[in-house]
Image 1: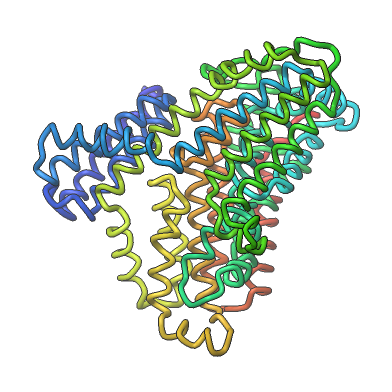
Image 2 (image 1 turned 30 degrees about the horizontal axis):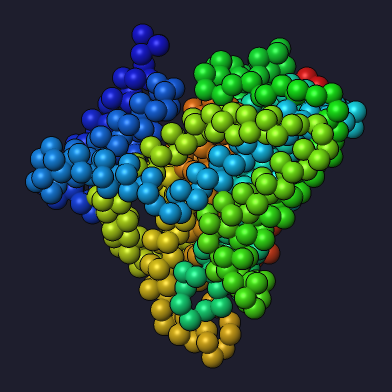
Amino acid sequence: MKKHLSKIIFAVIIAVFIIFCFIQAPVSEAVGSLWALLPPIIAIGLALITKEVYSSLFVGIITGGVVYAAASSSGFSGMFTAVVQDGLIANLSDSYNVGILIFLVILGIIVVLMNKAGGSRAYGEWAAKHIKSRAGASIATFFLGVLIFVDDYFNCLTVGSVMRPITDKHKVSRSKLAYLIDSTAAPICIIAPISSWAAAVSGTVDGVNGIRLFISTIPYNLYALLTLIMVIFIAVANIDYGPMKTHESNAHNGDLFTTRNKIYEESEEPITSKGKVIDLILPVVILIASCVAGMIYTGGFFSGTDFITAFADCDAAYGLSLGSLGALLVIIAYFICRRVLTFSDCMDSIALGFKQMVPAILILTFAWTLKTMTNLLDAGTFVSGIVESATAIQILLPLILFVVAIGLSFATGTSWGTFGILIPIVTSVFEKDLLNVSSTGDIPAMVIICISACLAGAVCGDHCSPISDTTIMASTGAQCDHVNHVSTQLPYALTVAAVSAVGYLISGFVQNVFAVLGISIALMLAVLFTIKLFGGKKQAE
């Protein structure tokens, strides 16, 4: 009975949700209603219960197609058009998505090259001499994630490929590695003034200096800041709770995966004994420099635009694919000149690198298609209506925006889309206050707090969602079963979210950054120490 309890609970929840959908609007009026959230809820629930990502996402996509066909009275042909043409084909022909896939494949090739050349093994052996404990491996992963702040995709894949040999050596579970990667990807990018995320946020409010507004939101971005504090605390204290505790205990006994990894193959073995630490460090440096150069190139830096503006106006997907391709050519030439790999070895790595990234490409494609279904059903309009109806209670608005952003980002798997929907609502609420910004230069504190709540909630929902690009990339970087990553990370993310919610509740009454941030940090540390005393389990070194 216990084995089927979760499935029964899920079935009951879905049944109740569908009843509420019918109460809110008939299926013929599903567009812009509660029905728009049904496809992602089904996909996410199935993934967490069945532990099967592909089938769960596909069922969610089909559900979206069926609801859309019913709403548009287009029958089976409408469903097939929505799923195949508007969904799969449109997403695989979208230039931004293709750019991300190209970057993904090239990074896979570079990782195979570094492994074949012996750079990863040499770095692992070097790190084993300098990093003596599981806590040290976790802290090293954290700091590398902080250093690579320009883009979350780039962060996830690079940190994973560099740190896997070290965390494996110290018996850190792949689920824990995925959590560390994910927690230093979006949370870092959303508080880094020079990042693809800053570029996205800075263009959402008209009539206000975008970069200045973004920098103003950083101290109020409670979820991102508290997540970083939690990562450091858990790494230093070496404790875990929830499903992660089981994964870490199993890793200490030699099982890094807990649920045997059914997707990712073992890393390519070195074919030479000449590999050195430089054979990993230099390719990573080349990759970082090339990707940054590619991003500012797309923003017009080499045509006379200043660096900050070029970064703000960059095309991240094009820049990353352009930079990674240039880096790949240089890295191949470097390994051939070093005589650690032959030209034939390098060419063989292309197919192997692509093969390693096939699972991530498939999950991303399905996740993008599921997001298309929610867009066709106009989930944004439904959520916007909820927020606009709550704007009368301005004191509670930061908390409301934070919670709504979490729900929308979790259901749609996109943080950028979430703050793209919610921030214009905030600006419309405070339109009169923003009219004076151009003359006074001062952005009202409540505007900054509410926009910060949107950003924090978007990152939190993105952090929790199985269909989030960043969550998928973190699983890929750690070569961890995707559902394992989601289920082990969820309790940690929800802990930070609960404390952040209290902080945003306080911010509505006390619009002082020092008071809000100070109380939130104190509360976060109190919760963590309580977990350490009563709920956490310290892992062996």
